[in-house]
Image 1 (tube, rainbow, N blue to C red):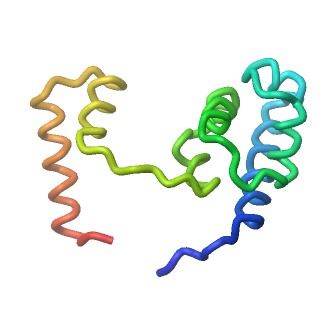
Image 2 (cartoon, rainbow, N blue to C red):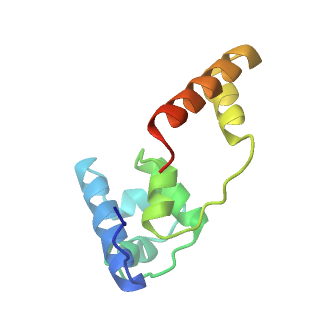
Length: 121
């Protein structure tokens, strides 16, 4: 199934609605979010209003962290291309879970087994 394609203005609106809803759900004002992130309140209001078609990745990551959102999901919603980095799974597993190399190898083998059984997307 193909993902729907969004033009830049639709993407900006969707991102703005998502960020605004997350902020409101957590009871954070735009003023407090500005203080938490170092991003101006005016910039936050413009992002939430869908007026910024290409917000900086740095600002998106700071907003995501402050709102406890998945950074990659926010970047993808904004249309930021995220390069595939070799070894990124290894790094993440070591950094987040302090796993030894043999555990990482086992996880990667399990992932490959699932791919082999169910096919690649």
